[in-house]
Image 1 (cartoon, helix red, strand yellow):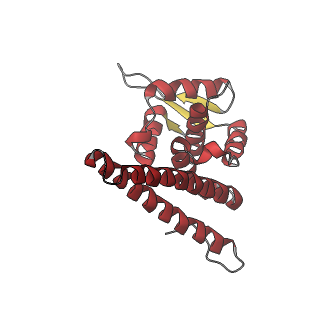
Image 2 (spheres, rainbow, N blue to C red):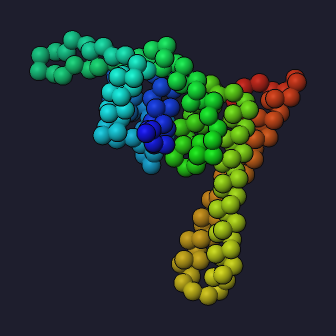
Length: 190
């Protein structure tokens, strides 16, 4: 059974290999750089997924001829089945695609994602964050001058961060709507 985490990793790997073939270390460095340390994938999860994708026919691999005493670097590239799998994953906009773990990976691949899927993911993410913000405001209301002031301050800080991300998403959603209009601006938000 495929877990959400392996689906997210598959999306990230296939999306990056669609740009160019690369070896595992290079792939991991790119994932770390683009998704940040909080969403970094470990070697312990990346290489087993690459092996599974290879066995599943989604990627193929070639080894280079290393200098004496060095291990060969295996270069991975997408197969036609891998490209088809990437397209399927890019078209998914299930509620899980807007959660913390999935959203960043999907967002880095929005340039290859259809408008209606981008809109569903952005709207789903906004809805999820608005629910969190409402829950925090309720918690702040219950604390209102009572309890630990540091807990209150932490909730207030989290609420501000959520509000900023919701505002950012609102801007992206509006930009996507304008781009979808006839004669609207083309391309990703700047």
